[in-house]
Every structure is written in structure tokens, then in C-alpha cells.
Image 1 (cartoon, rainbow, N blue to C red):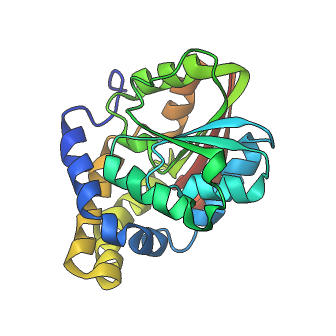
Image 2 (image 1 turned 30 degrees about the vertical axis):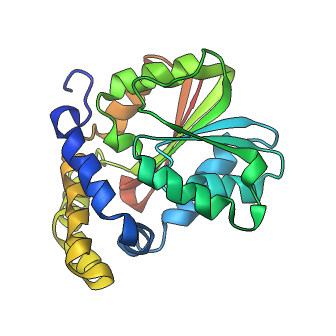
Length: 238
């Protein structure tokens, strides 16, 4: 397993792709996840978040994870953290539509590896389809652990890299070829930008390696697996 893992020198190019696909992000994401993205987000939330928590939505993007949390728990407060200011701006517009969630959210631009908050700040951290975009995964995990309170929880909902070689091959073929077809039909040529996901997948640790990496900092780690390990939720407790 490579030291630290993560996108490293590819990070800037992936972030630029994310900026380009802002207009079609939600539409394509729903299609390429085979309609399972929201189901997995909600499952992760109920596994790791409780009402009244202060939660960091790390890599919040448009705020889909935050919106799900706020709709499930009436007393949760969320800090949305993302490196792409344009996404935070659009998330703010969506969240404040009708002033439904405005008083319960805050928005901060930043990266996983240097979270601009004091230690022991959050009850939980959630990463919805964003952890794979970390620059250096071990540094991100270290920061998540630092800003979590004692007994706090980290929830990572993302693509998984199955340990079983046949399941791993199936996931790889889907992300490399079938995803491109689905994304093209959903959003035309702009949808083809989503093929960058395969680049992030190649750098992912296998699911067992991810568990081992989380256990270096967290006292317990659970894995919830779907689609033969190609869709995963990691719940790590401090």
C-alpha cells in the first residue's frame, strides 16, 4: 500500500473537472450510481449521526449529504467544507431557498488535510463521495481525528474497491467503460468528464486496506458493504 495514498499530483486536475461539471453534477451522479447515491447517503447518516450533533460535511459539494442530514434530524447543525467556492455558493442558494435550513448551516472553503477548526470541535464528520478526492488520505484521516470530539464518529460513503479480485474487476470495468456511456446519455459530452472518477478509483486502497488505515487513528471501524463491495460506508469511532 502506497504511503498516504490519495490524488497527490492529480488533485488540481480533478478539482478542475469538478468545476466544469457543476451544471450536470446531480443529474449524472444519480444515473451513474444506478439511483443508489441517496440511499447510501441516508444509510451512512443514520449509522453515524444523532440529533443535536454538530457535523462537519467534508467535501460537501452541492450539499446533498447536508440536506439529507438536516431533513432527517431537526436539531442537527452542519458546517459544509469544500475546496470549490462555486459549489459552496450554489449550495448556499439551494439550502437557503425558502429559508428552510439557513440558520443550521455554515459554509467554509478548505481541504481535508488542513481543516480550519480547533481540535475536538465536531460530534461527527461525514464524507459523501468525496474522500476519494483527498490529496493525501492519511493526512486527511489525521485531521478528521483531530477535529472530532472524544467518541466522535467519522462516516465515509463512497465507491469501494472490493478485496475479491472478480468483484474488483467488475467495478473497474463499470467505472472505466459503462459509466462513460451512462454519463454521455445523461449529459452529453460534458457528462464524459465524469470518466475522471476512474482515475480516482485507481488510487483507492482496497476496502481491507482502508479499514487498516482508519484503524491507525480510530479505536473501532465498521464497514457496511453493498454491490459486492463496490459501494461502501466506513464508520470509524474516535
